[in-house]
Length: 181
Ligand code: SF4
Image 1: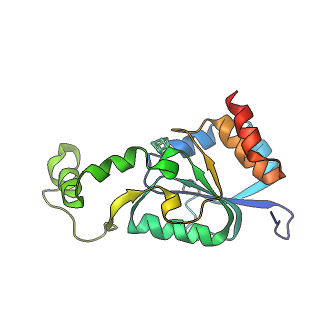
Image 2: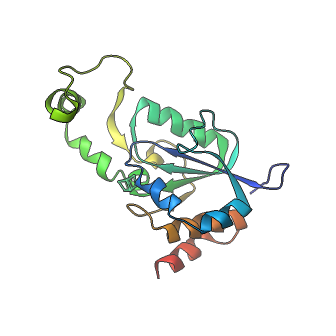
């Protein structure tokens, strides 16, 4: 893993179709965030609301791929990240968002925008909503994935073991396994 001219590694994170829980678990690193800050800069994340993802050493992806915007963001991060990491079970296996696959897109949109009382608009919007893909997909069905951190959400210990392992060059698999002991 290479370093930029400051000698520091770079991490970028995105969330696709998920619940934000994996990022909450990332924030639950608590005091380890200080250790992380010693090793790397978080150059993009939904929390920082950076629009243009720069070149980075590690890209962390939460959420599965449910619409065209998710796919575009994922491909963009894949192009920028030396190591792409699947963060959590939605990214890794589809998890909750993949329940949508039992229904047609028309049924899903009707339910979301017309039937559900809390969001009922009376009609399905025709603009400003990214087009749904035919099926929700885990990220490895769209791009090459280099490492997985499983869990819903992954524990902060597992996230730290994997990310610190990648940053320091120690075997991530062994460290993640130890985190679950
Ligand atoms: S894996 Fe679990 S915690 Fe993470 S985005 Fe999916 S549902 Fe939320």
